[in-house]
Image (tube, rainbow, N blue to C red; front, side, top):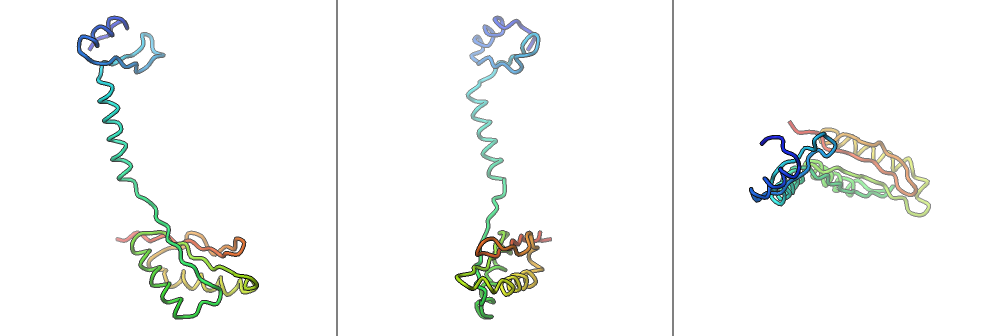
Length: 146
C-alpha cells in the first residue's frame, strides 16, 4: 500500500472490509495497517498453543526413604528411581527423619549418596544431600541419552 493520512487510510480499510490497526503510534506520520484483526488474533492464539505444546514439561518424581531403610526396600526404590530417570523425569530423593531418628543424619546422607552412586549412569546429581528441617533432600536429573 502507500502512505496515506489516517482518515484516508480509514476509508480505504472500510472499503476493503478490513480493520485499521495502528502499528507504531509514535512515528510521524503514525504507521497503520489494514488487516482482519479477528483473524490475526485467532492465528496468534494458534501459534501460542503450538509453542506451548512443543514446550517440554518437567516432571518431578519423589522417592522417600527412612534413615534405617533395609537393603530390600532400598533395591525396590532404586529400581523405581531408575525407571523414572529413564522416562526423563527429575528425581527428588529424600530421607524423612521421624522423632528422635534425626540423630542418624549421617545414615541418611550415606543412603542418598549410595543412591546417587548407583544411578550415576542414568542421572546426574543436581543438588547434593541437604538437610531442611526433618528432611534431607537430594535432586537428580536424567542424563541426555545419545
